[in-house]
Image (cartoon, rainbow, N blue to C red; front, side):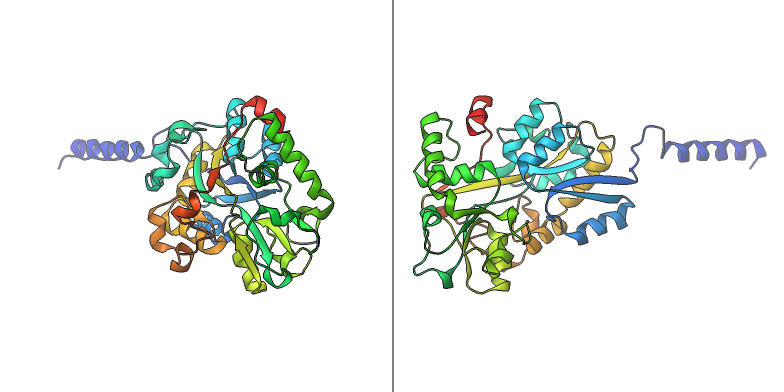
Length: 343
């Protein structure tokens, strides 16, 4: 081979090598800031992401969805936010959310049909539903004379103060459902009736965030006897049973409120591609299943079911039956006028 031909081949090889890392190819950021309610991403999953991609995680916690939305709108520096569906429209209206590139999140193909193209975000352009659940009551069966069956038990005064959470939609929602109204109503007379009814409970209720206990779950406060009953979710009940076998979850006969936690990327984040890689990692079936296995909440990924503990899949507090879902309603976003009434 002539030296001239060899030189040409070496030049072409170098040119092709350069094309594999051409300018403009997305690169991963060194760090990603996550904003979430409590510790609700398995630490093992976060550590695995850092190990695989070399991206450090700055994990920030909020106490309530209203606080989180306000913080986002105030301009706080987060990249990825996990938040309930009811908060998504106001963030969209404020142009606070980035449009997601689905090509960078191929694991979205595994999302259940129930969580695609939802009304608050058609075609999932700005949000990725991650986990969901029902809302009910968690209580100590050994402290009650008869089984709890509905929201009305919160107004029972002889067992001690009951626990609520500082979450507007759930507290007003249970007040509305206890009177036979929708948790999404915007009728002023129904909202006022729920307020009056809740005020009758006020002297016998305490916000769980004010207790000297873990503010991410009611389990410890129940186990320690700080409250005999609390507004709660599946995680409270299953963790609670490990602490005290008398802790039980009930779906209220009047109805239950379904919620969806969404993963969002903030429009002001300069790490959008890294955020999309992170979301795709969370949706990897094994990782999504680890979430369900650790926190006892249903995940939106259908392929993840293969890796979820069968006892969790069969637990009706986590994956409600179709009959239970006939008495359920999703917490839906309100109109601006409706939100003003709730506020």
